[in-house]
Image 1 (cartoon, rainbow, N blue to C red):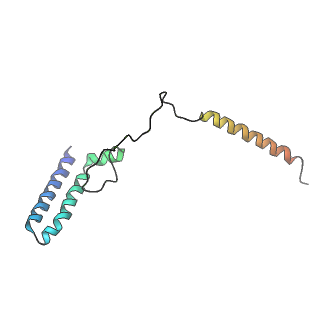
Image 2: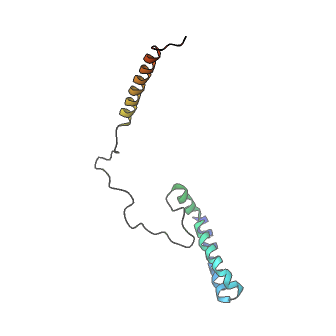
Image 3: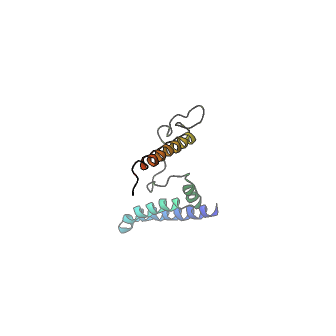
Length: 118
């Protein structure tokens, strides 16, 4: 991608400038660490990586200058053989709630006839 190449060229130039500043010594050497960190940050601003992060395909909270590491073990639990989610049927739960609500409303209405207001 053209944008990725431009960002990579800029990051390479910053890294080279940081190396020259470190070799020079003095105040420039103190700034070389910041320039190197800026180069690694600039590499994160590649358009293709930004699109991947927006889609959730790349990490969003990574420290500058570190590379992503693979997880040590599986991140998800074992899947069931049928592929269905565990738990009761949502239609049965909704039907039971409707039935209990109807019975409760009838009970309240029936008790209100026992003590009418005048």
